[in-house]
Amino acid sequence: MPRLEEFYAVWEQVLKSNSADVLNEIKVATIRGRGGAGFPMGFKLEACRNAEDTTGNGTPRKYIVCNADEGDPAAYSDRYLLEQRPHRVLLGMMIAGYCVGADTGVLYIRAEYPEAVEIVKQAVRDLEAQGWIGNNIKGSGFNYRFKVIKAAGAYVCGEETALLNSIEGKRGEVRTRPPYPAQQGLFNRPTVVNNVETLACVPWVITNGGAAFAKLGSEKSNGSKLVCLDSGFKRPGIYEVECGTPLAKVIDELGGGFARPTKALHIGGPLGGIVPLQKINALSIDFESFQREGFLLGHASVLSIPQDFPMVKYLEHLFEFTALESCGKCFPCRIGSTRGKELILSAQDGKKIDRALFNDLIETMEIGSLCALGGGLPLGVKNAMQYFRTELDEYFA
Image (cartoon, rainbow, N blue to C red; front, top):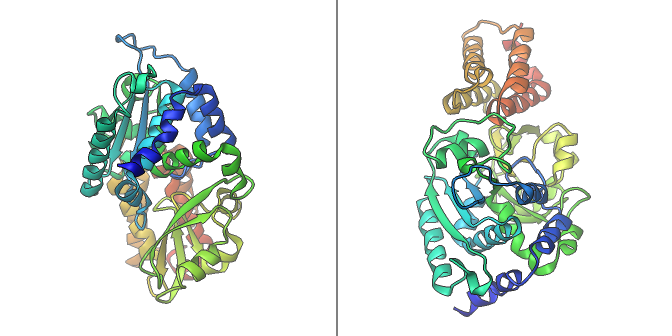
C-alpha cells in the first residue's frame, strides 16, 4: 500500500525524533481544540507529559482519548474524518501519544456511526499489519496500541469527563474538576482528551512545521476549520475554510445562500449561539469574532432556523433537549432545564413568564452547572431574548 507508506513516513521520522521537539512543533502551531472550547492542544499535551501516573497499579500508563461522540445537530465533520480520513486521526493520536509518553489511544465513537466504527477498526488492523503500532515500534522502544469503543448514545458523553466515565463502564455523568484529565483522567491516569478534527490537524503540522500552520488563519485562531451547513442552504455540505474566512462568504459562496426564508442561524450546536441574519457580516470563522459578538463557534455546525418557525417553540425545544440529555448530577442543569421547559409551555398556554424569574433561572444554569450542557444552554436563550424580543415579548410579563 504505497499511499499509506508515504503517509506514515512522517511517523517513522517522529519515532527517531526527540519527543520534546515534536511537542514544541504542536505548541508553535497553536492548535486550538476544534470540538467547541478552543482550548490550546499543546497546553493539554504538556500538562499530561509532565504529570505522573500516581495510581500505583503496576506499569505507569497514560492515555490519548479521541472524543468522537459527535452529537450536535447539523454537525458531521467528525463522521467525515473517521469514515473518509481515518488515518489522519489515528496518526494524530499516535504523535500525541509519543509527545506525552502515552502507550494507548482510545477512540470513543458515536454509536449512531456504525460505519465509522468498522472503518476505524479496519484502519487499526492495517497499522498493525505494517508494524506502525504495537510493541517496540520499528525498533524505537516506543509502544502504542488502540482501543475502539462504541459510545453509549448519550449527548452528555461528549463532555470529556462524562466520556471518561462511560469508557470505564460507569454511568455517563460529569466529574467535578479539578483534578483535570491531564493529571487524573481515564482510570485515574494522566489523559489527553481531544476532538477528532483537532487530532487530524497534527500530521499536517508535523509534516509542514508548526510555523506554517500558525501562518494560516487569524491572529488567535490558526489553521483551517471544517464547517457544516444544513439542508437550509442551497449547497448543504461540509467545507474546509481557513480560519478568519468571513461567515458571509461561507454562506453565500460555498453554501449558495439560503434555500428557504431564514431568520437565524444556530451555530455550534444546541449549546451555541443563535445568530440573527443582521449579525452575519460581523462574524468570521474564528473563535475571537464569535466571542466578541456574544456567540460561540463551537464545532462550527450551522443550523438554519426557518423564518416561519416560532422562536418560542425553538426555545421550548432547547430546554426539552437539555432536560432529556442531562446526566442529572447537578441540579442547575437537571432542574433548571425542566423548569425552563415548563415556563415556556405555560407561556404558550397564555400564562405570562415573570422576566426576572426567567433571567434568574438561566443565570443559575449558566454559573452553577458543572459542565457546558446546563452552562451553555443560556447563551442561545439570551441571544434569542436579545435579537427576537419583539417576537418573544408577548410571552413575558
